[in-house]
Length: 103
Image (cartoon, rainbow, N blue to C red; front, side, top):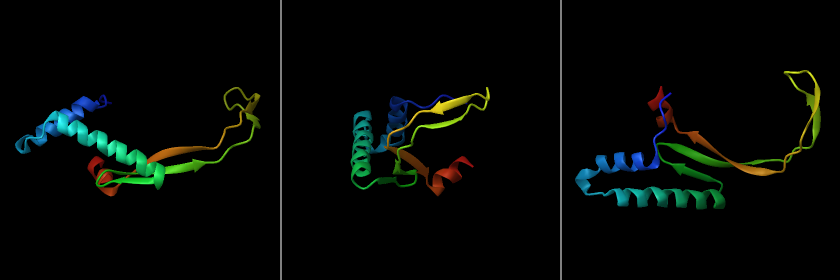
């Protein structure tokens, strides 16, 4: 699998695509950072943030789990699974256009 694109590479590619509109790398970086900042505040406020044509980010509340006993599937020994506190996680759900681009 190819290595993941870095933030600076992304900024460079976007500024190259918009070279006719005189968008500098600094302008592109500002747009990306403001998109992230707005996304964080929307996730905190409403629990969902949509980047049109890319993905929908959703906050999911995971309940606390109690300590429980079970069996290690590899060694077949009884084991105790630790309790986990309640937490919130962020899930990204790709929109149809992103799914079609990969297929």
